[in-house]
Amino acid sequence: MAWNCFVICLKEDWLANTVTYNTLIQGFFQAGDCEMPNKFSNRWFLGVPPDIWTYNILLDGLWLCKAGKVEDAWKLFVASVKGVKPDVVTYTTMISGFCRKV
Image (cartoon, rainbow, N blue to C red; front, side, top):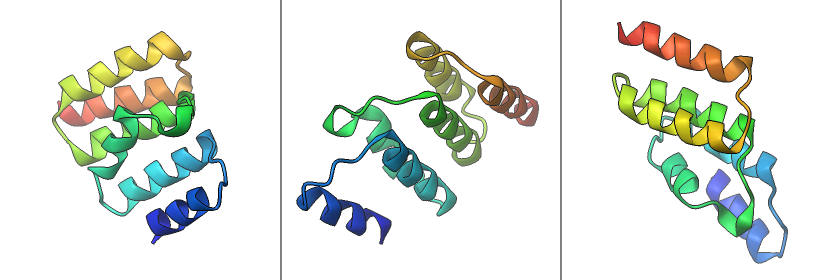
């Protein structure tokens, strides 16, 4: 439903921003859809760059959806710190994920 609304907005020439994409990504994870957020992270729509919140949402989703996929979370973390400065949420998410892995 959210995706359909988003598509309608784009057809109406409404420009999405980072907050829009973050909301969609988080919503997909919360609904248990772990594939759709990957489509966003692999190709940023309309040139909207990810911010630290985007990476935090993706990292948290990786730990929730792919428990045990330490390599995937680590790769995303390394990629994120090249573009944005990690914050306390970023580090807490990573530490929490590693603790669950143990």
